Image 1 (cartoon, rainbow, N blue to C red):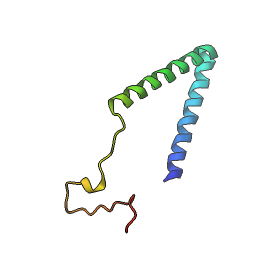
Image 2 (tube, rainbow, N blue to C red):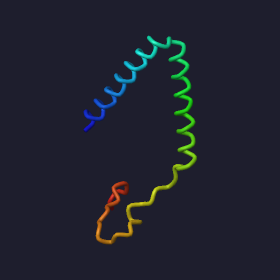
Image 3 (cartoon, rainbow, N blue to C red):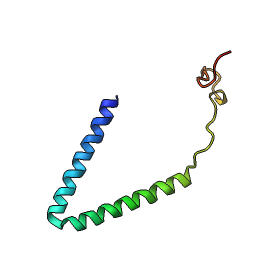
Image 4 (cartoon, rainbow, N blue to C red):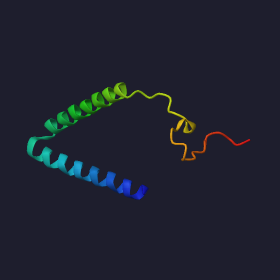
Length: 80
């Protein structure tokens, strides 16, 4: 599965680089560089908004399940 995910990331990177180079050929490198800086800034703002909307907190333990028919072992605690 890791190979599929790696391949997908590489394909996306290749497409983005090709698109950026084609845009730089038509619009010029400074315009494309500025657009990339703006896109990175927007991505950072979106990430911060997401983190504030869904803050990391304690996750419910496996024993907090409401379905009694499912056995969920606690893999983080050593058996005594």
